[in-house]
Image (cartoon, rainbow, N blue to C red; front, side):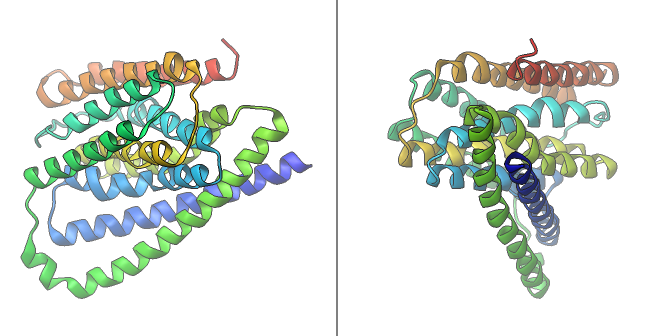
Length: 314
């Protein structure tokens, strides 16, 4: 009965998280369109941050509730599900060529490489945390270099933007409250079942908090905005790492198990490399159809195998 009670509250917390993220994404997209930015930039910034907000708030809440392992598991697991499950499903519909610059892939690659270095050492220290903050700065710099804001649109629609900011704030409140419920009761479930917090983060919380990315990607595909899907995955995975991992480095004494590197990080690294290959196909190749379907099958199949591995089925 206690297990069911905690599971139901966890589901309620995730529902609030997803609702808050949906509201956040909707208003963020409206604001971005009002000020005149491209689909890729919308995906990389406002949509990516909005859909990453559940992971970020769960990560931060977990750290201050002395559940840093849960936070790290959620971030790594979410990044894996973003590529393998969300982008994998999207691959079956992605055909349109990417026309914007791919300079923002640079901080994406650096963030994954630096995560591997940090995890290999067995403990995230202050210097490694500072480097992640530097990666965020690089990401923001590449965004500003690749996009110009329409200042005239900002001035003309100031009153509408204030209304959008109000609903943006409501969504943010939902994210904060939902993250607190999710962390608390996911930790309770782990204690009841005797399951390590890291596994709970890599599975239940990672999948639950990736639902906003799935919803945003499906909506973008329906509207034939392939670049927004790509931007959402890139931006979301960067935000997950550069916001949560530094917090672990500064405020936690978490000592990492070897399996985090040899199992979970290596899976993320291989998926990230395959993701880059798929982006290159979308950017440069003329034969996209069957190749993207192959990528889709590979990504989704890899995710199923990874979950089975965590569950002890293989």
